[in-house]
Amino acid sequence: MPRPIAYIFRFATDPATESMTMETLQAQAKDDTPSSSPSVTVMMPVFNDWPSAFTLIVRLNPLLVQEGYRPSYLLIDDGSTELPPSAEEVEAIPDVSVLHLRRNLGHQRALCIGISWLAKNLHGAQPIVVMDSDGEDCPEEVKRLLDRYDREHGQTFVFAERTRRSEGFLFKFFYNLYCFLHIFLVGHRVRFGNFSVVPSRRLPSLSVVPELWNHYAAAVVVSKQPYTTVSTERGERYFGDSKMNFTELVIHGLSALSVFSDRLSVRISFFVFGLLVLIGAAAVVIMGAQLFTDSAVPEWVTLTGGLLFLCAIQLITLLSVFCFMVLANRKGNTFLPIRDYQYFIDHVKTLSR
Image (cartoon, rainbow, N blue to C red; front, side, top):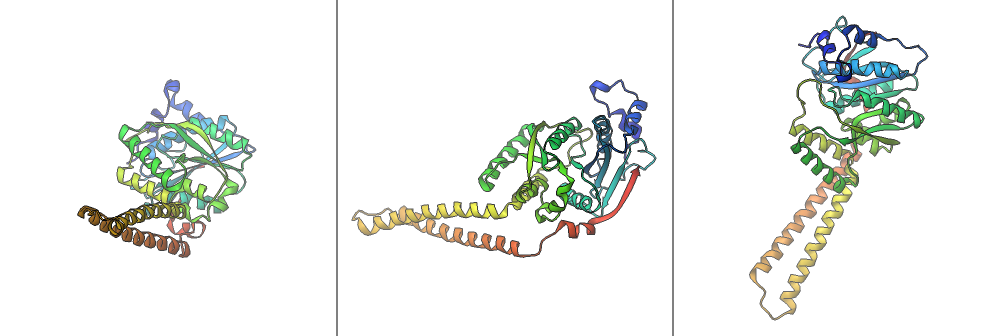
């Protein structure tokens, strides 16, 4: 069961504000801004992590109000098995809505549904802050992203580029391995994740990118949307442990690579072609030694030539199958976010207004 809001407020302060009373925090959360203030929508997927989500809102809301924004919050309930707090429990937090999905989709596809829903229902030009709900995306960094968004005149995606990570050695090792594979297979390194500011005027364009269904950040890159980055540090979770296990991390990485399937297929084709050239050169050397020299050729050389020939046949077969799969995927009907998102939405509930 979700913890009461008093529990959330008790842990919502940082070391610099530990002396703040609950009444002070509630006053900050209720702080009204003039209706003429620019709006900002904060969107975050949530799977059972309601205490962290509301702690994040309580910390972030005063910062946005102080900067002169009129914030609203859209929580995407990604098939949670625990119900969010009732409206009475979160009445101190303004403009919080929950978009309930009919099933768990994972945070990337939950973001796809949220972006598509905003493209249909959000009116007026404003920034949309996309962030995780667990606290690892620091609320203090949102101001820097919004400042960069303003300097780009509201035309450009602004992503948080990590300069320091808080995970352990094993995670960092596999993350660096993934970054190397990403450079080798795609041609550029992994630079950012979900934490970003989206210009609302880019929502119609992004919501017709089929790759958004698999990976938000990669879809922005592959659709050639304008983007820039701001260096940030990753924070630590407010409550509990991450629900992302090793298997899901691998799936997440493969989802990002799948967005670049065309580019990936070309680079793999070049790599396989290079291997075939080397195998062909080795076969010519072996045949030349047998045909044009009188010296006896060792038996292991002949066996090696046969094995290389079999490897060449297998590589050609795999490359052909892979290329046909990529071409079939380009021709087939894919998930179109702006058209298909509505099938996954159960209802939208306003917790406070």
